[in-house]
Image (cartoon, rainbow, N blue to C red; front, side):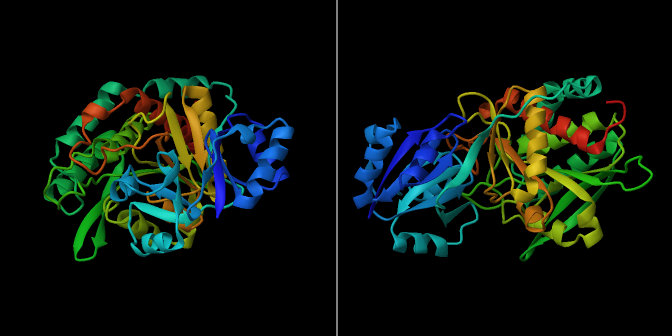
Length: 416
C-alpha cells in the first residue's frame, strides 16, 4: 500500500520534484501539477524531511492508494464516460492518473479500446510539460503570411464540412466531403489525388495534395495533415456526426494553410493529406506510411498533424504539442513559432497516442500532433453535440498561425 499527494509545481525549478527525489519519494508531472507517492510507512518520513527543507508536502492533503498508479491517455472524455467510477486522482483532460488494482488494470488492458490506453505511471516522468519558448525575431514576410490567415474562409470551410450529416469513413457523405476537399486543393493550384484505404470489409480514402519545391537538389518533404472523417459512437455510419471539433477544425485548418501557402513558393516539397479511417483505428495514416519507400521516409523532414484545435479546455488559449523524442526539434520549432507569432500557452508531451502522428513516429519520422490545450476534457466529441456552437475560432486561428509559421520556415519559403 502507498500514499500520494497532488501538489502545485508551476515554477521552472520544479522544487517539488527535487524534494521528492532528495527525500525518498516518487513523482510524475502533468503540467502545473506534480503527484508524489511513497509506500505508506515511508510517507511520514518523506513529509517531515521535505517540510524541514521548506517544501510543502507536509501540509498537503495525502490519500491512501488502493492499488497502483496508472497513466490513462484518452480521446475527449471517452475513458471517463466508459468508467465513470474509476478512481481518478489527477486529471489533465487528455491525461489522467488513476488508482487501479492489478486486476482492474489487467481487465482494462484486455479491452483493447481505440480511444484510450492504460499504462503504468513511470516514476520520475514528465507526462505533460509547460514550455516556455523564447520568441524569435519577427520575419516581415512571414508576419504577412501569418496575417493572411482568415477567420472568414476558415469558418466557411468549417460550416461546409459540418453541413455533411456525417463524415463517417464508410458513408457516401464522406466520399462527397473528400471530393469537395480535393476540389479546394485543386482550386488553390495543387496536384491532387485520392489514395484508397481498406478497412476490414469496408473502404475509405485519403485526399493527397502536392506542390513541388523549387530547390534544384536535396529537396525535403513537409507533410501537413488532419483526418477528414467523423464519428458518433452512439450509432452506426448513418447517424448524425457533425464532427465540428473532431475533426472539421483540423481539416479546415489544413485547407486554410494550403490556401495561404499557395501564394508562397518554397525550396522544399509540400504535401497536404486529409486521412480517412482515423476514427476506426488510424487506418488512413497507417496505410499511407506503410506505402512509403525508405527513400520517401528519409525525405520527410516533418509531419504537422492537426486534430481537434478549436475547443477551449484551458483558462487561457493553449496548444498541446504531442510527439516523441524523434519529434523534439519539430516541437521546438512549433513552440518558437507560437511564442513569436501567437499568444498561445504551449504544453508539450512525449506520450503519443491515437492520432495520425503516431504511425509516422512509429516509423521514426518526426511528427507532432497539434491539438487544443488540455486541462479539462472535451465531452462533445464523438457525439451529435460536436457542433459549431462549441467552437472557439480565436483558439483555432492561433494554432493555424503557429503551424503556418513553423511550416514556412521548414519549407524555406522564398522572400521571408
